[in-house]
Image: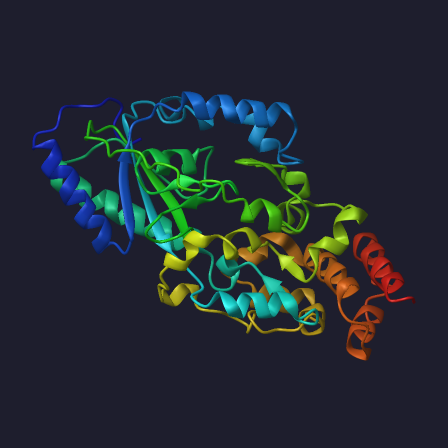
Length: 358
């Protein structure tokens, strides 16, 4: 926070909130809402989830559990939270399904096909905060984009941006779920927006389609089975029973969003930073498996994929190659790294070759 304590607004609060909404649109956000900081029910849900150990090896989730649900403890003086949404929708879901159906091609979660969204959103949020300061003078605030223990989906729901679906993603009835979230914690007593209401009804498509059965109940995700966790966050060997269901997904998974009926309302937003890089929407597994570490680092500069590191990248692709059609290209790719010298990679390559009877 830039100021230690809240102060009364000098201007009409409703008019100020409306002006901030205009500034958010000018900053490039398609959604914006204001919420309070009460998250009691969500804190109880989080505590239960943590108590069951469903967070896997993401120890930071447990370490900062309560602070996630208590904005004023994370940033003293916080009275309200401005939540924003930035669309990144892929447009044509058929392209995604075609890639998933082609075992020789690599599937990368749609959010990771272009540049990493964190820096772009953070810069825009800070500019928005600066514009607000231009209206009210210096005020206490702090910007977040996946950068601290924040219950962003609960806050966004309370700000009216959408409801938390059964797959745990936020869904806007007018725009689906293909959007990023960011927040500004503020010490201004602005009027809050009405929270979003849920509209999943009896639909269970996201639960039913999950390849590894990671959605164990509505709004209950077992991260230890989630393909996004296994291919991005998890550092060790992927459990063998989960390797075949991963298919050709090498970084993240979108199945639960692709199948969601509300995403027929998703709008394509052509943000230049989110355009596909390195032909990741059409690349074959063999092509990507051939990347050296130097090439990986060069090609993933500014990309969310960089966080996986080269050895996990190879581990993930080895699993996908084990699930790919048995072709000379597949076998040649696997044999090229059969004795890489990295135990993690070698184990998964060996598993993949055994899948092909080698």
